[in-house]
Amino acid sequence: MAKQPVVLQLVGYSDSGKTTLLTRLIPGIEQAGIRVGIVKHDGGHDFEWDQPGKDTWKYREAGASLVAITSRTKTAMLEQRPLALSELIDRMAMAQADLVLVEGFKRESYPKLVLLRRPEDQELLSLVTAPVAIISWEAFAHPVLPVFSINDTDGILHFIRKYYEDGWGKGAR
Image 1: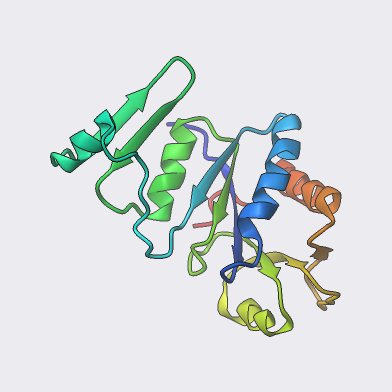
Image 2: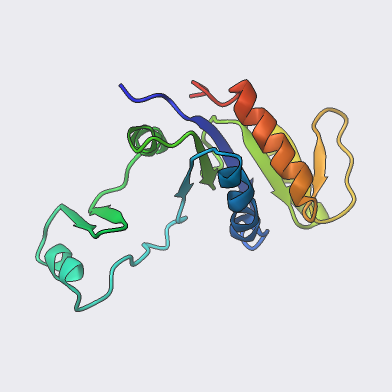
């Protein structure tokens, strides 16, 4: 059985800056020696992964349930079915991720960083479970949770490293 990774979700409304923030944080986490896995929820857009006309696309179009491709430097696999977040995390564990950062999946029960872009986004705090910190585009204070500015990359990185070291997100299902 693979070692269970620490899990931390980043949730926010559309265009709140989730992907941009994660791309700023990943290098600092990896440089700290923490192997990061990312799971992105595609809120119903039915993403397209492989290129029309390429071999993997042809196999998928022919009806294969699973298509994998590997090269000298990387591997990818596409399944023709949705998976639960817990299953995706288990697969990240098998791939030896230390920390799984999840973008989206607002209704899941893992600990969450809540990203607030506009004042009206504050309602999200009452709609999600297990918030552990807030990242805000505007000055904001919370009576219990730590609040970071969207531009405080170092502060957010420090929080995530501490979160990982303390193992807060293990077994949070």
